[in-house]
Image 1 (cartoon, rainbow, N blue to C red):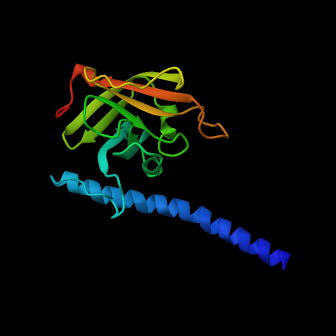
Image 2: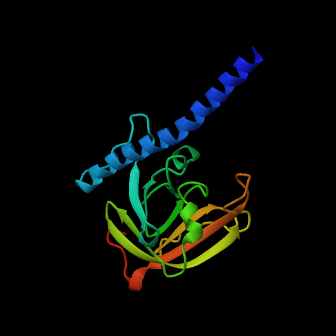
Image 3: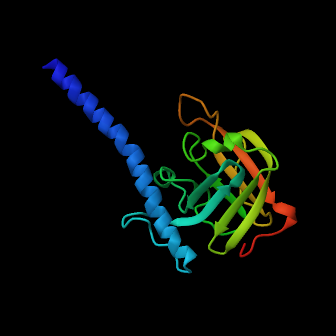
Length: 186
């Protein structure tokens, strides 16, 4: 009987582990479908009926082959499905985008100074260049938005390979407009 109980527990754990990547893939497909409305000139609807978010941008790091949807609403619930705008919205010039270090933002550790980033929002496409990568203590350094600065900051937990989650340390990539150009629709 103990063997049967162990087998059932193992099967349940395997099913749960398989469900997580399946759910993540399905969510990405639904988010992409919602984003297609933006490309057609219409507002993006929520990706699924009960979602309290919508795709607000596409972030690309061409040198690394990365293309990700950025969601509105800075909450842990939304962060599970992709990077989110740190201040909850894609509006403005000084953008903060947060993502999990072990999933969507794992690529941040491979970004280098000079790498290009592209951010497409409903208002247009912005081209940026990575100018800095820093580790900061979130207890001592705040991520304030400055409406007079045109930049993008990508933020994730650090260190990347830590066995524990959370913690105060953050890895911050800062990118500025390429060639001094400003983004359309800022």
